[in-house]
Length: 451
Ligand code: PMP
Image (cartoon, rainbow, N blue to C red):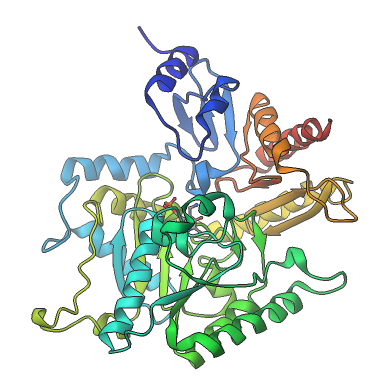
């Protein structure tokens, strides 16, 4: 017998434990079974369609079941599905590394693969620490992170993150990091520019490095947008100043572009907007166009050289994951890069982003909207109880969850972060689909604010 929405949901709840979910919530709200996807649309078993307004957790760039990526993967499947990358290599891994390094900011010349975003962060943290150790600087054992930053859920990544919801419970298990104030422009003073605020906040980080550089391996940041922390945004000047400070104090800069890379902020990589090259660039999510788990950490020759020695010196980076550089993932990534080359994706995104901005002007004056902010193809609407006093709704009211549920009923997938409703659609969305998405969001927001 073929599945229906209801039958699959029942079977699911008997065996699955879903990510980022209080499973008891599903007593009152069913999981949504998806049978197929095409472009920005997901379809359930009864033919109901949902516009994927968040690119399925920010991974999808060119639509679900993209014919070009599908064809590339089908060909790869017939050729080589997987081989270990230690001692062996394959063409997709080599070609992808060559292309990523050509695209990335100048100065990055080595590509280390992993298989998801958190693993990429673990690689960067370990490589940075190990680099200093190989240089005889074993005193460098700590990392600097920004308030409200997010870098994944494995223990190392969690330790350099600062979103309490994910982190607090596990605190006793986490290495201790230095946390600097966020350049997040939500907190700028009235009349203060975002650039001035970000610059002001940078002074705290500078002071922290002045005191602790001897102990610090690296500063890790999400360039321009702190995504999981509520799509909080800051000015590129912060990154420019940070790059300079990392050089002055002799610490690495890790740019976690797992969420913001591949055109999301308006440039191919967010770091380009500050004209900087990090020491480690972490990539995942959109890397494969949203098809397969793959990650890459790009770094410099000078880092690579510090590990390059006779085996007995025990300087090698022995980190590994079974699926490191999986050929299918690499091939999906190559097809994704082809799609960037075949048309002016960033140019079209600029038009779509302007259209989205225009459609969302309506929210700015809303009595329960604290801020509408946008960086490229990310637009966020921050709901608030008391606008004048900047008082949030009690979190227990879960207003964002109501937005999610109401929007789903109207055929749009949104997944607010707390009370921050945001749009982060695939790049193949049309202006008409943007109109529909925003219209539904407006209705859902009104419902969520109703009581
Ligand atoms: N870094 C950032 C900036 C992210 O947004 C995420 C995922 N939301 C991660 C790291 C972790 O990636 P993954 O979920 O693939 O482990």
